[in-house]
Length: 481
Ligand SMILES: *Cc1c(COP(=O)(O)O)cnc(C)c1O
Image 1: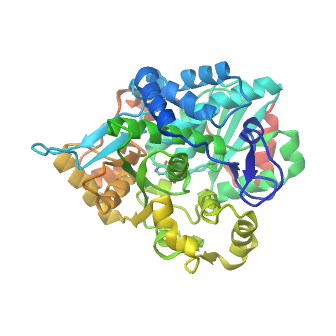
Image 2: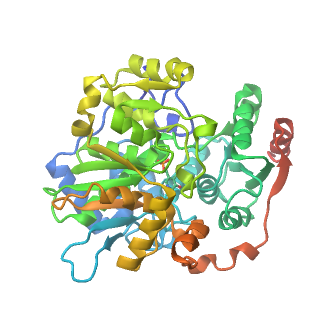
Image 3: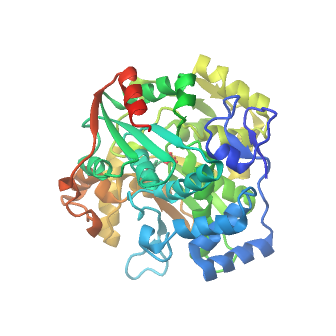
């Protein structure tokens, strides 16, 4: 398997070459040259793997279709080390939870539990594997990597929990001082591992991102200190997410003649793009429903064919904050497929065109008109009021507390139900992470998993610093030997 850039660059690379890279040299995103196709026999074999060898076995089989530069025995060991009951809380790793009222023959829908990893959000599903892949590949090369990131919550803590204690990797994670939820701060800052550096910046999230950009743009510094990232455009993260679409499908169906639909709470389009990849491989997915919050860049595109990047003033701070985006950084991958993999056209609309105009318009393109049929996409949006109401309804009808992002998914899923096709909503976080909105909706505190009792009282390790690039650089330099 070789990987290409969505912007048409001539290079073809192997998996481990792009594992530690961000963008392709032409600014595009990496995708496999083609999606491996699963015929009926292979899909049946995967169902049997799921039944006999569970999630780790399934992950190994799916990843093997895309990774041919890690020996099979090593890849298998990496999957088995990553997807354990000890780390993800259940033997199934991603169990389905039916939303089914008493006296009803069928569930209204299912939640697929992706949020029982160390940081209680679905990003652990991919990041835990990435931590083990990084450690493996860096050791093989005899190299080191210093991950520099900016976070407003979920990504940073998932990265830190994945990289803690890993040989060859250090994490320098900036976050806006005092602006994450108390639970999220406690999660991150209570990590005392020597290779994890929490840097609380006096400023807002944009200041943190600007610092990361400034440091990464200093190519000499970047090379000398081996600076890398783990952001959501990383292909390995996306690939790891493909696996749970298979696991969800096998749990919701008895045979491969059946179809299911998925609704995915979406921000940067990473999660649902993994669903697109699974569908392109031949997994019998009927609809892929993209659920956004008030930041509805993606819903607007699927409704109108216009992709319009939002300015800062137009980007809302919402109660599902991990979906507060101004543009969707993985969206280019889908558009490349939609444009029948025309790298020149993808480059034209996402490169200069987008920076100059702030939007592109595919409404007149017949391929856009066909997109809902060809690729199965639907979309919808949810607001704060919808979120509260959905959290209340699910609690009243099913006795289950759901988080704000998952609530956006359930709200939009309800608008796309088909009695013939089971609907699976991806549960992207647990309610404890966003306690204040749960209290607003239900008048009571969310359930706290036992291992998180009292984490606010644990000792903290965090360095508060001004939003000053030079000082951050010198902090990194000092902590790199
Ligand atoms: C990151 C995140 C999302 C959005 O996922 P994308 O892959 O960016 O679309 C949704 N919900 C939660 C809780 C998240 O952390």
